[in-house]
Image (cartoon, rainbow, N blue to C red):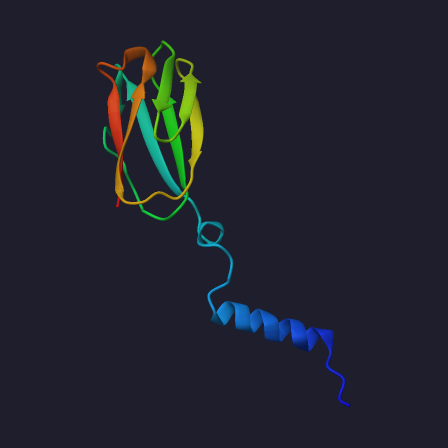
Length: 118
Protein backbone atom coordinates (compact mmCIF):
# COMPACT_ATOMS: atom_id res chain seq x y z
CA UNK A 1 0.00 0.00 0.00
CA UNK A 2 1.35 3.40 -1.01
CA UNK A 3 1.56 6.12 1.63
CA UNK A 4 0.15 9.52 0.71
CA UNK A 5 1.64 12.52 2.40
CA UNK A 6 -0.50 15.07 4.20
CA UNK A 7 1.19 17.80 2.14
CA UNK A 8 0.13 16.16 -1.15
CA UNK A 9 -3.46 15.78 0.04
CA UNK A 10 -3.57 19.40 1.26
CA UNK A 11 -2.21 20.68 -2.04
CA UNK A 12 -4.77 18.61 -3.94
CA UNK A 13 -7.66 19.94 -1.83
CA UNK A 14 -6.44 23.52 -2.24
CA UNK A 15 -6.12 23.13 -6.02
CA UNK A 16 -9.64 21.68 -6.22
CA UNK A 17 -11.10 24.48 -4.10
CA UNK A 18 -9.44 27.17 -6.23
CA UNK A 19 -10.60 25.48 -9.44
CA UNK A 20 -14.17 25.51 -8.12
CA UNK A 21 -13.97 29.19 -7.18
CA UNK A 22 -13.60 28.77 -3.44
CA UNK A 23 -10.65 31.16 -3.14
CA UNK A 24 -10.45 34.13 -0.81
CA UNK A 25 -13.63 36.21 -0.72
CA UNK A 26 -13.55 38.97 -3.30
CA UNK A 27 -13.90 41.70 -0.70
CA UNK A 28 -10.82 40.45 1.15
CA UNK A 29 -8.74 40.07 -1.99
CA UNK A 30 -9.29 43.62 -3.24
CA UNK A 31 -8.08 46.91 -1.86
CA UNK A 32 -10.95 49.15 -0.77
CA UNK A 33 -11.87 52.04 -3.05
CA UNK A 34 -11.13 55.39 -1.40
CA UNK A 35 -13.66 58.18 -1.77
CA UNK A 36 -13.02 61.64 -0.32
CA UNK A 37 -15.78 64.15 0.39
CA UNK A 38 -15.39 67.67 1.74
CA UNK A 39 -18.05 69.56 3.65
CA UNK A 40 -17.74 73.33 3.32
CA UNK A 41 -20.35 76.12 3.64
CA UNK A 42 -22.85 73.35 4.46
CA UNK A 43 -22.38 71.68 1.05
CA UNK A 44 -20.74 68.40 0.10
CA UNK A 45 -18.07 68.41 -2.58
CA UNK A 46 -18.35 66.45 -4.71
CA UNK A 47 -22.09 66.19 -4.17
CA UNK A 48 -22.18 62.91 -6.13
CA UNK A 49 -18.90 61.05 -5.71
CA UNK A 50 -18.51 57.71 -7.50
CA UNK A 51 -17.28 54.32 -6.33
CA UNK A 52 -16.97 50.89 -7.96
CA UNK A 53 -19.65 48.27 -7.35
CA UNK A 54 -18.82 45.03 -5.55
CA UNK A 55 -15.77 46.40 -3.75
CA UNK A 56 -15.31 47.64 -0.17
CA UNK A 57 -15.30 51.44 0.12
CA UNK A 58 -13.45 53.71 2.52
CA UNK A 59 -15.30 57.01 2.70
CA UNK A 60 -13.25 59.92 4.07
CA UNK A 61 -15.33 62.96 5.05
CA UNK A 62 -13.60 66.24 5.98
CA UNK A 63 -15.48 69.12 7.59
CA UNK A 64 -13.89 72.44 6.58
CA UNK A 65 -16.59 74.45 8.36
CA UNK A 66 -15.95 75.88 11.80
CA UNK A 67 -19.09 74.21 13.20
CA UNK A 68 -19.79 70.51 13.75
CA UNK A 69 -21.71 68.42 11.25
CA UNK A 70 -23.33 65.01 11.51
CA UNK A 71 -22.71 62.83 8.48
CA UNK A 72 -25.67 60.48 8.24
CA UNK A 73 -26.93 57.85 5.85
CA UNK A 74 -29.89 55.67 6.69
CA UNK A 75 -29.01 53.15 3.97
CA UNK A 76 -25.42 52.80 5.28
CA UNK A 77 -26.69 52.86 8.88
CA UNK A 78 -24.08 55.49 9.72
CA UNK A 79 -24.20 58.57 11.96
CA UNK A 80 -20.89 60.30 12.62
CA UNK A 81 -20.38 63.71 14.22
CA UNK A 82 -17.51 65.58 12.60
CA UNK A 83 -16.10 68.48 14.60
CA UNK A 84 -15.32 71.71 12.78
CA UNK A 85 -12.02 71.25 10.97
CA UNK A 86 -12.10 67.50 11.61
CA UNK A 87 -12.62 64.39 9.55
CA UNK A 88 -13.96 60.86 9.85
CA UNK A 89 -13.35 57.61 8.01
CA UNK A 90 -16.28 55.32 7.26
CA UNK A 91 -15.83 51.75 6.04
CA UNK A 92 -18.59 50.49 3.77
CA UNK A 93 -19.27 46.95 2.63
CA UNK A 94 -19.29 46.20 -1.10
CA UNK A 95 -22.38 47.77 -2.68
CA UNK A 96 -24.50 47.04 -5.71
CA UNK A 97 -24.80 49.67 -8.44
CA UNK A 98 -27.09 52.48 -7.35
CA UNK A 99 -27.37 55.95 -5.87
CA UNK A 100 -27.07 56.10 -2.08
CA UNK A 101 -28.17 59.21 -0.15
CA UNK A 102 -26.20 60.85 2.66
CA UNK A 103 -26.70 64.19 4.44
CA UNK A 104 -25.66 66.47 7.29
CA UNK A 105 -28.28 65.76 9.93
CA UNK A 106 -27.77 69.24 11.42
CA UNK A 107 -28.63 70.87 8.04
CA UNK A 108 -30.58 68.15 6.23
CA UNK A 109 -32.69 70.59 4.18
CA UNK A 110 -29.63 72.06 2.45
CA UNK A 111 -26.77 69.58 2.84
CA UNK A 112 -27.31 66.39 0.86
CA UNK A 113 -25.27 64.18 -1.43
CA UNK A 114 -25.39 60.80 -3.15
CA UNK A 115 -22.74 58.11 -3.47
CA UNK A 116 -23.03 56.80 -7.03
CA UNK A 117 -21.92 53.18 -7.25
CA UNK A 118 -21.32 51.83 -10.75
